[in-house]
Length: 133
Ligand SMILES: Nc1ncnc2c1ncn2[C@@H]1O[C@H](COP(=O)(O)OP(=O)(O)OP(=O)(O)O)[C@@H](O)[C@H]1O
Ligand SMILES: [Mg+2]
Image (cartoon, rainbow, N blue to C red; front, side):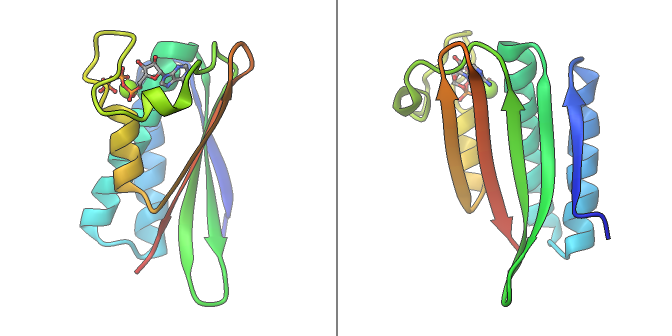
């Protein structure tokens, strides 16, 4: 079984490719349809942010297995402008683009684990995990 894969995000259409790969992996791992939808929504938000704010980047997938649980880790990586104030972007409604500002808080709610590592001018790495239950 392939345990690592990734999709390059460069054009808007790549967001669809990332969603499809995520859904496929989630299905194979045994997630139900509701969790598959949560996962693909989270991927869309992360990939769209890469496309909009960084221009390009990657959505990486990793199957994580431990003795009593397994899950899907999704890592969104870019070398864009980074996020100035990480706590601010996690507030509902904060947007620098006139968007709803619901993307990142939404991803945090949809997934079981969520972490942002970002520095101005270095880029952003967002790591999320969903566990199969
Ligand atoms: N990969 C990224 N690189 C740089 N800045 C980012 C990145 N992702 C998010 N941001 C910043 O965080 C803000 C909040 O992101 P979030 O996805 O929550 O909302 P939004 O994209 O503005 O609106 P929505 O996703 O609801 O359409 C963005 O407006 C942007 O300033
Ligand atoms: Mg967004």
